[in-house]
Amino acid sequence: MVVEDAFPKFEGDLRRGAIVLAAMSQLATAQYGYSLRQRLAEYGMEVEEGTLYPLLRRLENQGLLSSEWRIEDGPPRRYYMLSDEGRRLYPQLVISWRSLSAVMENLFKEGHPHDA
Amino acid sequence: MVVEDAFPKFEGDLRRGAIVLAAMSQLATAQYGYSLRQRLAEYGMEVEEGTLYPLLRRLENQGLLSSEWRIEDGPPRRYYMLSDEGRRLYPQLVISWRSLSAVMENLFKEGHPHDA
DNA sequence: CCTAATACTGTGTGTCACACAGTATGTCTA
DNA sequence: TAGACATACTGTGTGACACACAGTATTAGG
Image (cartoon, rainbow over all chains, first blue to last red; front, top):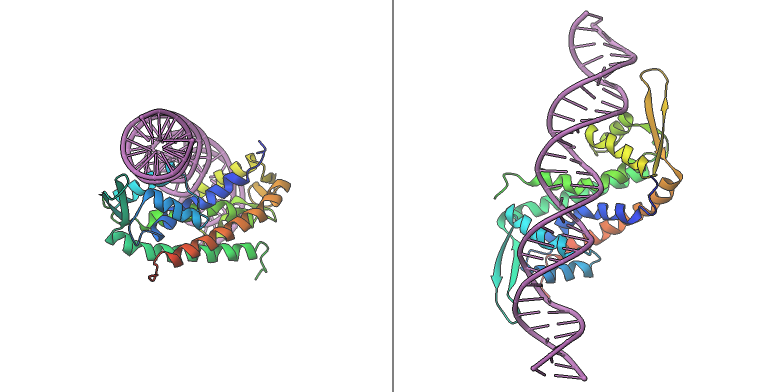
């Protein structure tokens, strides 16, 4: 089964795990879903609505975000931001991410090991 | 629903997308599953057997790897390596990975607007 | 022999990104 | 004032996949 162009699929998979961290990175200050989505897109991290909204609800369920409805001008919007737990976890995940990056770079380099 | 310690879960999710790329990075030369797993572990990328073996079969199905049984000393082993298609795709995925890394670093930086 | 390490196969489960669809409000403009 | 379009959120279904768990067979060492 030779896939016509597997690239988009694998590229998507790469981004997958990073989405949670990307969202958290912008939620030190409160954002609502739509604005967060636009913000991430500006940085080159495009996320579908059907991905981002459930993600935010999930993270709130897991205690990493808190949210509240706010009525300003325009429609009511649900604002999300990091909870205490989220603020605690976020820097650890950043460290994990960087550690993973370092591992990957080593793997790229060492496609053929020097041998001991 | 406050999760006791969500960290391992999220850390795992981060690694998830990278596993395919990690495996491919070491398959420029033929490896069998078990040796590949040990090799990745040495670099700090630990993958369960139940993850790696199906992954290799899947990548072969998708045309990115080819494999053959070899009988040497010891039990027969299935050796995997990048196919032509895999060799073509791999560098593109490395570029994608690095691009993603760059995006993430930007997000980390700009998450806490040190005030305008 | 007996154990442990090696090496692979197979099944089941839970999670999650995304597709797709739907609802409702706000804004612009002709 | 009506229509189109952007905004903003909710909900369901599906497919992919990492991992848990279990099983099989071979090999090496004491």
